[in-house]
Image 1 (cartoon, rainbow over the protein chains, first blue to last red):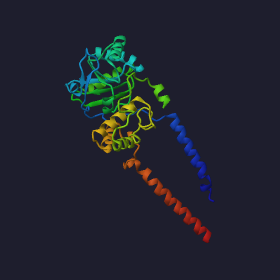
Image 2: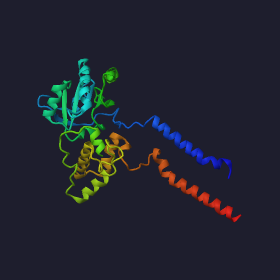
Image 3: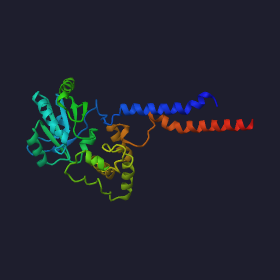
Image 4: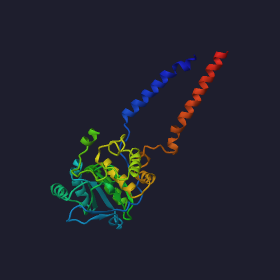
Length: 175
Length: 126
């Protein structure tokens, strides 16, 4: 047996170890990204999540100005802190709309009373159908939609205080 | 399965109507079941939506059964989901270039095997 062949298993082992260490050091991205970025928002029409607020449909998005569509829920823990950041975004003139996943009006009202209400419109999505149509895989998630109704950016997870300048620049670009 | 539902908060709504209920038409239910076993759960990645207890998986089963009941083809439903989540969502291997090694590997291994056997026979004959 030649020398090269004799050392082949060892080399293979080393290769496997290097691959394992590399993947442990830089874990794979487990976020599921929507493939709709750059495409039009799929048509939807949701009933109002609260009787006191307007309903939400895809037609409300192609209005000439950018929107931030927030996929949230009253039962979602990170949404509690996110909604306060959304309030600061709203205060700087951003149009924020909500899609409430698997929620009920009383629980939603309670959530907004406790944590503030930055939403212009809230659509109720009790069977997650619009969430799936958007290619979203959890709460909270947010979509920057431009004035023509095209999705420009998907934010997975809560928007934190530090993300505000980035979100604002995405919205600015979507103008 | 348990871990997933604990890690993520769950809503207080009951499961969607068709999430844990079979379609009355056994043929349609079989079609839905076959498709659900090939769709990946977005929450418990690695499970199919047929296996997963995650609420979103239940809502996806509801979506699949409703669309099958409305007469939509399973391939059309799969394509609709792939349009949103990429080929990631489907367990069914595709013929895309990225999957070519998958299809070629068995062939390559067979060829290597044949070559090894040939070498053995030749060595013995000598």
